Length: 142
Image 1 (cartoon, rainbow, N blue to C red):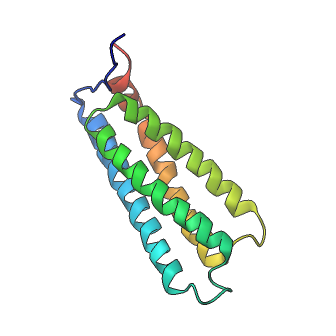
Image 2 (cartoon, one colour):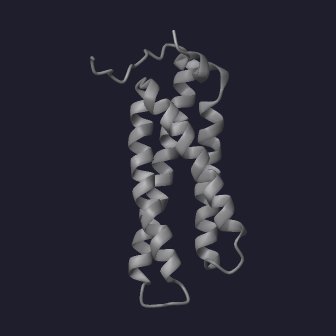
């Protein structure tokens, strides 16, 4: 049995290229916000009103997940069909997780919910960019 490689496509459609670039930039923004949030968590860790155990856990997970998602987004923008699918699935799952987090009353401080809302907004745009017709057509199996 031969090992299957991650097929890539050449992104020639200007609209698809633009949408993939936008998604990549937004994933970079998501990673930056998440890492800066983790830094804020470390700085304010002595104040339990600002940084709870739940904030530590969720903030750490978000920072790692955002960096992985950004790396996948860079590969997607270069034409990786597999990472295109991964970014779609991960971004949508993260949006759902953020909606759930935002809906739990009292689980997280307001500042963290605002940060999660910003990340969710960035990811919603990523999802919309990756489901655009030009992008879907580019990555359609041939």
